[in-house]
Amino acid sequence: MPPRMLRRAMNPPGHSLARCLDSSRLDKWSNQFRQTLGLHMPIHSIEPQRLYRQISAQLRTLIQAGEFPVGSRLPAERDLSVQLGVSRPSLREALIALEVEGYIEVRMGSGIYVCEPPSSADAGFDLSGEEGPLELIRARALVEGEVAALAARSGRKAQFDAIEQAIAQMAAEAAAGIKPIDADRLFHVRVAQATGNSVLVGVVRRLFDLRLGPLFDQLNSHFETPEVWAQAIAEHREVLAALRGKDPERARAVMQRHMDIAYRRLTSSLTRARKRTAGTPGARKASSGAS
Image (cartoon, rainbow, N blue to C red):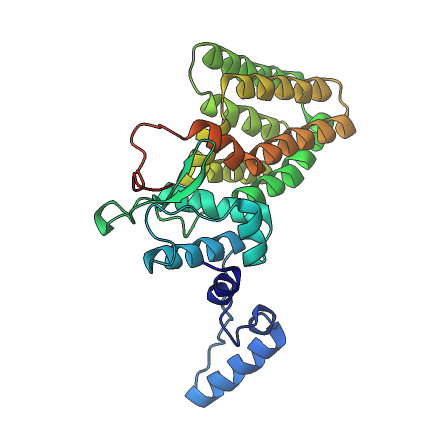
């Protein structure tokens, strides 16, 4: 599809996101609408979808409409982000969502190809309620950095010993070839428990569990390797050292760096996918005639 047509499909004439999101105008319209209908309860404006969901929805519509035929190759990521007027990280999230749903396939050294649209019977995962992975990592960096700092101030030796046990469990599972996701969760929860604040424990637990959805599963399949887990375990040990040293600033810094490294892994996930996805058993195949 030519860039001009693609931009028009993504942004129909007369559409202005800024106009739609003008809160004062929305409130005015809401009040007028309520008065016209004789309603007493306030009508709240609907919050816009996250950007990656909007991008994936538009691309999905174009694929379903045949604008991107089955077996065809999508434009390069750089070109597509320019044509859509969005950032590459947001585009990557959208493409990963479409890959999870079975609409596209990433081929090693070749590009991203359109697959036969899934039928309603095997339409894959509903990602409409899933948080954006990049947003989630940024939120965790902010929250868990402060949690680590507070844990360094408030934590007791027994709590730090429990954190060390979680790290040891991670290392043992990784050495046995088991993905240590449960022990990873235990580490972060126990750091929160060392703050003595049950609300923070619940927040950290909830934030971690948000990464267990299908979109994260697809991301993790691209970059979770024994080497990555070994690095994560080493980063956890740095956090523990700062906690035992009762150094809040250091604890905050190393926890945030731990999250920043995870963020960089996420933003490079599609690049890694080109090296890993080709030939994956059970992957939905595009037309063999594609070039």
